[in-house]
Image (cartoon, rainbow, N blue to C red; front, top):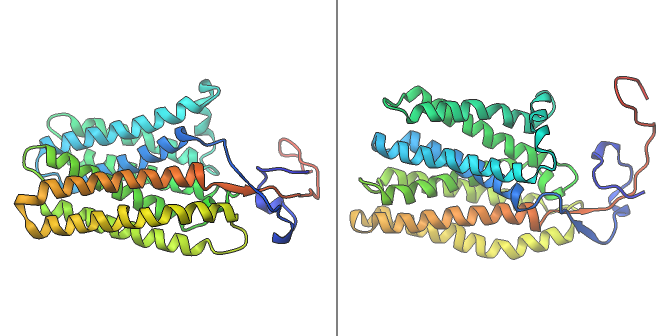
Length: 301
């Protein structure tokens, strides 16, 4: 009997029993992608603002934007709920669910974030919001990694990839904000974005190399191969070159080059998440058998 949502520990069979045709999951769509984008970009922006904002005014602008992006991502996932009144059930499974742990990071994220925007801004509140946002981002990465039915999600190396691209997206948005605000882009911020970009490059390469085993559907590999060329050239090398040029040339080109690089880094990170969640998420239909009947409650089957 075909089934697509059973955990792998109760599935029997070998790779030779997998069907020749893979199927693309359709349960998680652009609204789920919006949540991953909001969590990653918002967390990265809050980190960049807390570390390197040159003034309290710049910090408030960047932090407010980061909080708004996270909130927008949560609104996207709420729009997907068939029964929004059951949303509070998310807080019931902290021992087993990374989605529950993500939910528990929200109160301190938005509470500390809101307090950090009030005059006078409190440094401890800024760091509280930032640490909560990073925990929120890590939980999102683990949600994907624990979705064992989708091979390209279940790989453990997707965790550093999702974290790294979130930090890169946030640093990119921080560059754009700084270029538009008084004071402009500081070389240290451009250096932070370059380091985040390098981290994303390493995580992406390690993730791609880890997918070369029979359990990953051929269709997923084809989608990622088609995406990889443009992503590595346009999303990695081009913004890296712009940032190096911005740092090297200094004031005359720093704002313009850095803002362009930041937009590219953020947009390509969003494209990566969209590709992973909606276009490369193929799974095999596989027969299975159960050694015992399942039962509700604590009764032993």
